[in-house]
Length: 107
Image (cartoon, rainbow, N blue to C red):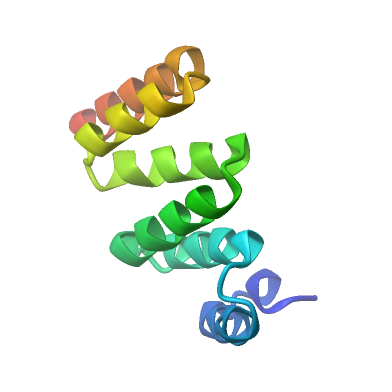
């Protein structure tokens, strides 16, 4: 069982930091670091690593993750730019971001 599954977010982050020290351009490590920071509600650090993961890999999974974190940080201008660059977001992320905004506003 990994640190994350045990709820040891600090241990999880430390193990990912070690991986990034060996391979700083490893997209999966940045992706998992963004998830770890999301779990600890450090949305600024989560956004940084989500952006790096997407810039390195450019795949849809990292793009969706980056867009989601951008919406949590209310960075809609950057998210709009991301959607324009990827095209895939035009039908999938806009409704999700609007829904997330509505949920946050109504809570």
